[in-house]
Structures are given as C-alpha cells and as structure tokens.
Amino acid sequence: MFKEIAYIMEMIGTVAFASSGAILGIRKGMDVFGIIILGGVTALGGGVIRDLVLGATPPAMFTSPTAVILSVITTLILFCIFYAKIDFLDTKIFSTFEKLMNILDAIGLGVFTSIGISKAIYMGYENKILLLFVGMVTGVGGGIIRDTLSNISPVIFREQIYAIASLIGATFYIYFFHKVETYKLMIISAVIVTAVRLVSIKLNLRLPRIKFKEED
Image 1 (cartoon, rainbow, N blue to C red):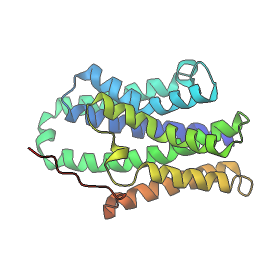
Image 2: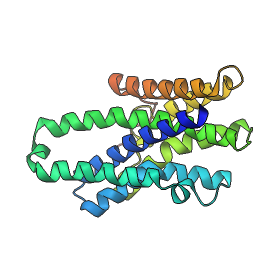
Image 3: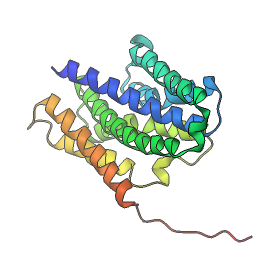
C-alpha cells in the first residue's frame, strides 16, 4: 500500500509542479525547450537534491524515468494549448489559469514534502533534523531552481507562507510517524501543507519583513 500511494502522489506532484514551471516559462516568453526545462527542474529538482543528500545515487529520475516523461508531456500539452490559442495570454483565461497553478503548486508542495520524508525513513534514516530538511528540500528545491533560472527572487523568500507550510507538514509527519499508518500519514501531511499554503494565499499571510527603501 505504501509504495502504491507514494507512486500515485509522486505522479500528482510531478504534474502539478511541471505545470507551474511551464506557466512561468510561458509568462517569461521562453521557447518550447526552455519551457520543458523549466517544468522539468520544478518537478524533479527537489527530488534530485533529496536523493543526493540521502546518498541515493544516481537520483531516481535517472533510474526510473516515468516522472521525467510525465513532466515533458505535461509541459508540451500546456505549450501547445497556449501556442494554438495565443490570444489566451491577453485574456482573463490566462489569469484564471495562473490561479489554478497556485493551487497545483500548493498540491505539489504538499505531496513532495511528504514523499521526501517517506523516502528518507524508508531508507532507514531517523535523524529528525535530516527528515525535516529532506522533506522541505523535496518540496521547495525545484521551485528555487525554477525561479533562479527565470531570474526572479525565489518565491519562498518573498511570497505568502511557503517554506513554513512545508515545515509544518513535515513536523506533523515526524511527530505522528509511530502513531498513524504510513500511507495515511503521507496523505494527511500533504493535505496539511497544501491547506496552509492555500490559506496563506487567500489571506495574503506573510512572514514579518523589513521594508527597505533604496535611495536614488
């Protein structure tokens, strides 16, 4: 049951993150290759970092390319939709699509946070700091790479609560690991992360920051 649930969740997260990366690529005016790359690093980047930290080499994307193929297919579908209907970019349709991408991005964040911890535990790791780290890096790592390649400040440093949502879900997972069945815990933790992220977007909740006005 654990492997089946983990596989399904990974595929959901891959589609969600690849979509968010592709939409950003379209907004940035990238060509089809750039959009495929951006969707791919968003969907797979966090998992690669996780596997390298855990010593699982080569990373899963190279030994089981299903996620890679799914990411490419997802980004190509989105590219074809907007290439065929270029007028979508100048209408409310694209704005609505971007709102949907926020939802998908939140789902991806929750799913990959949960999967990251699950894989570490499955490999025999018990250190709580390590589990928190790999959970969060699996969730936010791809987004950091995506934003860096897009020449924008990573969303985790400037938008509504993002990494903290991942941290909350990861903490919940670790605390209840010996109290709840693993496959149930994976789903619940992913839902918690997703919910926290979506609520923060809805209410525009942000961490405190210092507003610095540069002198001309």
